[in-house]
Amino acid sequence: MEDKLSGGCLCGKVRFEVNEPATDLYHCHCAMCRKMHGTAFATYAVAPKESMVITQGADNLARFDSSPGVSRYFCKTCGCQITIDVADRPGDRWFMPGILDGAVHPGAADKERHMYVGSKLPWLHLDEILPRTEEA
Amino acid sequence: MTTAHQKPIAGGCLCGAVRYKLTAPAHDVYHCHCSICRKLQGALYPTYGVVARAGFRLMKGADNLKTFDSSGQVHRHFCKTCGSHVFEDVDHEPGSVWFSVGTLDDGADPGGRAGKERHIFWESRTSWFEPHDDLPKIIEFGEKP
Image (cartoon, rainbow over all chains, first blue to last red; front, side):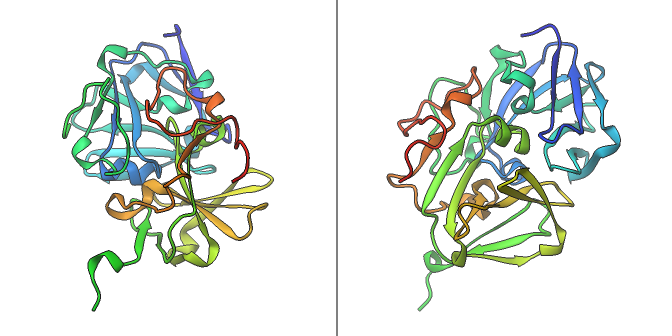
C-alpha cells in the first residue's frame, strides 16, 4: 500500500487520511451492511484508531448507531458512509476502501475475505478464490 | 388465494424511516464501478435496479430523504437518519427509477437480471478486487439495450 492513504466522500466535504496499513480487510454480506450502503455487499478495512484522522469536515458527519456499540458516520451532504467505531474494539476504526482516492489498496491483503456469507444475496455470484465465513 | 411469492417486493433504508414497494420487476440491473458511485455509497461497486416509475412506490419517509445531485442530471436520495442511499432519479430516464438493490428486504431478487445484469464503467473499477463472474463487463454504459 501507499505510505499514507487519503480519501473522502463524493461531495468533498469530508476528507480523511490513514497513516498506518490496515490490519483487516473484508467484504461483509450481512443484511445490515447491505442496507446501510444500499449495495450487494460492503467492503471494510480496519486500521488502528489513531491512524485514521478526519482532516476536514468532522462537523459535517452524522452519526447513526446501527446496533448498540456500533456507530456509523456518514456525510450529511452526500450521504457517503465514511467510518465506523465499534465499542468493544476501542483501538480500531473501520473505513471504506471504496472511497480511497485513486482506488488504491488499503492493505491487509492477506486478511481479505468474505464474511456473513450465510446472509448474502442468494443470487449474487461469489468466487471461490477468497476465504469465506458463514458469520463473522 | 394469495401465495407468498405474489407479495410485492419491499425495501427501505436500514433505520426503517424510508420504505418503498416494487409493483413491477426491474428491467435492468447494473453493478456500477464508476468513482462517483463508489464514493457516494462507500462501496467497491453499488448495484442498481432500474424499474418503471409506475412500479416504484415510496410508501413512507419522503420527508426524511435528502437529495444530493451527483451531477446535473442525477439526483440521489438518501435517508437523513441513517444515510442509506435508497433510490435516484436520472433526468434522461424520466420514466424509470434507479433503486439500490442492497436496500431490498430479505435479499430479494430485483428481477430483470436475465440477459440484463451487467457490470458498467468497468474501466473505473477498483484495481485490486474482481468479482470473477460471467456477467458482461462493459465500458461506461456500453450500447443502450
